[in-house]
Image (cartoon, rainbow, N blue to C red; front, side, top):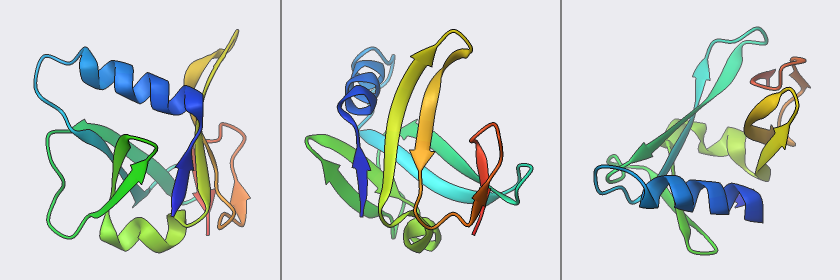
Length: 107
């Protein structure tokens, strides 16, 4: 369904390990908003919500919100660090257009 790069997995695993509460994975959803109409939502969570798709990405658990699953098929998530800042990036083959900031897209 989706892929995490090694850098993204390492970052997520480090954040989960250093959290003050027990967390089991990363929740991903596509929500309305952003300059292109849709934006990615991410949160570290204790457990999946009912109906979430559970994806094992080489030992890192990702929970995909059910209504977002189709829009995320084939997506690769990376974590990049640069002079401009650091953060997660999405390479989504289902995005018809994405904004310059890379945080939102149009389907």
